[in-house]
Length: 450
Image (cartoon, rainbow, N blue to C red):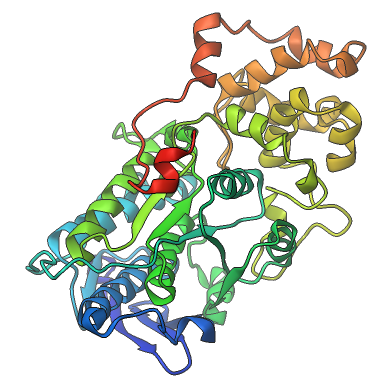
């Protein structure tokens, strides 16, 4: 088979309602068959809350949600070969779903393509078939909110804001990272854990020439969250994606932005909301609670929750398929996320608290000089990580200049000498609540000051 004939096939999907196992089966023309599974807890399989008159509408919605998990999760296996053609043994997506998948895969794999000098993967095109929009009676789910938690500051801010508003909250963990479980325990809220079994062959194929790199994991987790909400009876899924997720890392040759955080972006959120409205009458309200805010504003709010300082972490070395790579600390102290959170949190906590979290003064670490130059927007591109804008980093540094604990710190003085000042208009914009964003029309949301 020539490369132009290479194919990736969606073979079959099966959800076993008796044991909660969702099996996803794919085939790549070069690397063969793959199977991934998601295991949903027994507590989600009872549906005691579901009225008989809603069961048909619910079953239809669940079927659509299962298909959407199947289609989106396939990107983890498609990336091994980046086949030219996508095929389906069973149901094809509707036109609106196919466009969502096409856009999400092209943008979500743009980083991998850039790092392998492949250009923009415009040949990724999902075929579709005609589907009618869901005109069934709108499925009415219990007024409860499912909050995906990743162990970092953002989801904890969402949790506390929803708690303050009196919302009925349950946390969601996709995977089995121990750190996330510990952070969830600190919230003292109930949590649902969806276990994920990635095909074991995936980690072995790099030696055989397979591509390896970033995939739009938040897009996958979004589809899993919506399915979980349908199974468990939640009318809302509240992610914690901030507005800086819209800011790309660099531009590809065709002018498109390569954005590590595309599946956290407003563009993805809006497109997925349209898909949900078309396929299931938007029975589940999918949105990001923190969309109106800058990272800096979110970090400032997080600083008001010191009960989480000892347990939270945004460092991705905690979240490898083989387990955490951080042996003695929750923060590796050398990655872009550690550096970004260190600087943006520093103005709002004592120096003692900051060093207790990170172990040492990252600004004084000469090994991180190039990383900070990129994060401050002085040299190089924005790192391929879930970090905020250079303006936020600069503004945090100027705020730190006023912090009593940092007056005599040479590390701060060193970076301030290189930093252009932040004008008042830019500073004001960082603290403003900006549109566009979406919040559900629910009593708790409308009454709360977001």
